[in-house]
Length: 433
Ligand code: URA
Image 1: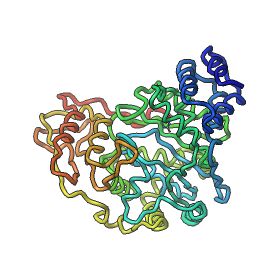
Image 2 (image 1 turned 45 degrees about the vertical axis):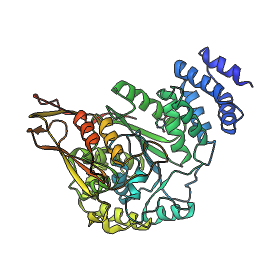
Image 3 (image 1 turned 90 degrees about the vertical axis):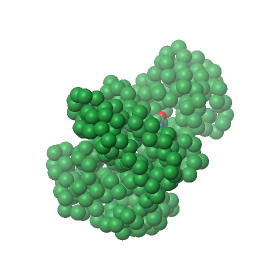
Image 4 (image 1 turned 30 degrees about the vertical axis):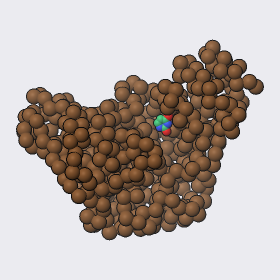
């Protein structure tokens, strides 16, 4: 086989075979196929797309390019959850303990944040003592004991995807549905998931800007799941504004605790309950979504989910007292209020700009090597649809620096206040099965 012929084939709109795709992915991972040929192929895929068989073959080849985690020593259906990324998205922190409390094993590998979106692993590390690196034996033991463990992604998970993603980033080929879908699903397959709930975000803070694009991505990922015998459900949820009210690592742990206590932000709670219910459905614990939803609400109200969260923190070396005493979490030295510049209703909160504002404070990384400040972040005191008077606080900045002018103007730019009340935001647009 010659790479140049395969590029030509894809460029002509023909279909690559499973063998050809395996040859490309393994050759590229080994370094036998150079970046310039891979770039040309990625661009041909960008323009000509792939069939569902090609996408599944690409997913399997990328998953198999490195370590394939074997979770067979954990009894039960291992249901994973993945979000395409957003601002203030702390759903994994909330649904993990809920689903574990219902008896479904959560053996999760999560990523770090980059750019304007946060990562679950960074948020957990804001808990004093919390260890995100466990040996495979300790990871399996923790899940078998507490039904939940969350660790950082193994360095050798889907290395082909890592290399291809870096290349896509600099060749304008990131936003291709076959490439995004296979990239996400390859990591889920390699990390040992039996079933997967995908949370595809749409809006100002997300990859996908329209419902149609999000639906197409969701459909493609569900089809991959079906072909590879992993039961998969994709929800399409809102990221027009940040999720919940807190942004920043320790801030998001605090807000997750509130939701697990049953006193959290209503919209965040609603999305979390739906995600947890779909996970429980795939874990085959319930017959219907409605039954699962009732059980999920009950497990929060009776305090069991919060108890599981405490056990989970302690089992990974963290201080479980943060649950009852959130002041034990890192706290920023200064607080500044961002005030409404006029009367009216909040019509827009650009999630991406809010994410960048939090990153400027030190809550996120502009580059992979950047250090995170766990204590800093933002509290959104007003959200879309809320009425506000001039001079009232719309957002609180938690900072470890005294000059926050750039952050403040970014937040002012993200909020749009108008005279009319906007139509209510839809939280869940669709569910693809
Ligand atoms: N997230 C991924 O893991 N891969 C993509 O290609 C896009 C988002």
